[in-house]
Image (tube, rainbow, N blue to C red; front, side, top):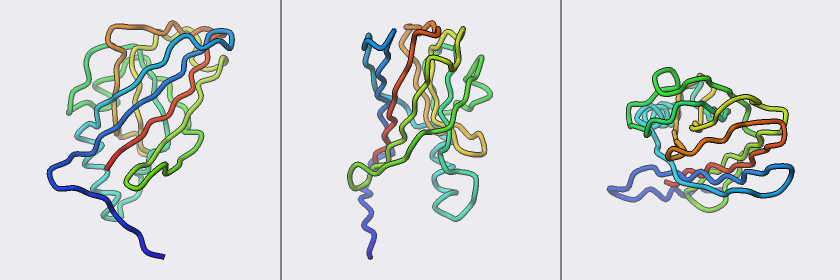
Length: 152
C-alpha cells in the first residue's frame, strides 16, 4: 500500500470549523472557518518528525472573544476553558483530516462560548476560531455538533 501526499508549493495548512447548534433539538445556527496557529504548525512538523504528544485529541471552548492570532496558545488566548475529547477522526479526501465532536446538553453549561480550539494531546493549541462577537450562552437545552477539517 502506498501513501500519496498532496502538499502544494506555497500553500499553507488551512482549516474549516463547521458547527450545528441546536436548541431543544432544533437547528438554530450553522457556522464555519478558522486559523491554524503557529504552535499548531510547529506541532505538525514535530509530529511528522516522530515526536509524540502532538496528535489532535480535544476540542476546547472558551469565553474570550478576541480575534485569533498566529501566536495564540491555549494559555494566552482562552478564558474559562472547557475541553472535551474528539469523538472521531476521518479522512474525507486526499490531503484532508476531519475531527468530529459533540458538546451535549450536559456539557459546559453556564459557559458563554465565544471561541473554539483544536488541541493536541499535550495541550498545544493547533487551531483557533472565535465567533465574531456572537456568544452561545450554553445551557442544558443546547447541543453543538462539529467537524473541524484540516486541509493540506
